[in-house]
Length: 144
Image (cartoon, rainbow, N blue to C red; front, top):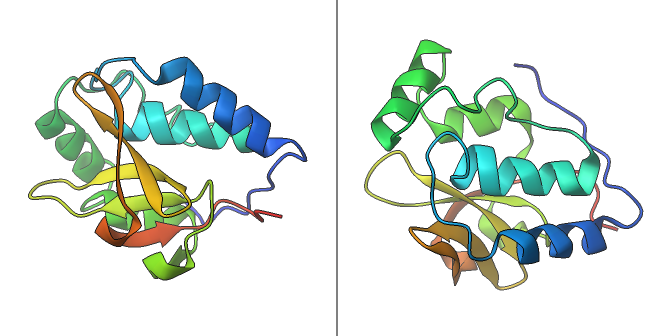
């Protein structure tokens, strides 16, 4: 996949907040509503109209399956995939609506920057972690 240039809608904040409110209690479902194809891709779609994950949605049903699928598609991990699509920045430069790659023990996790916090998936819905938990930020268009 080549680097994308995304443009946020004029009313992206309202679309993002409406999406997050809609899914706040939606449980984790790998391949349907997880950190990548659900939370992050749908949030980006709400802000820009572009679905970044259409080709991956429904193709796996576990974290291990997600990693296998990414590797089959030529990406070592979520960082490699993110860097192939969007510009990467240090977490201190994260803006509301950007994608955060959060450190963890396995594949990693993706979330949406909301100021000093990152909205992330939990088993039962949305949670948050500190912005400093991010390894990288992927810029989603201009946050004007």
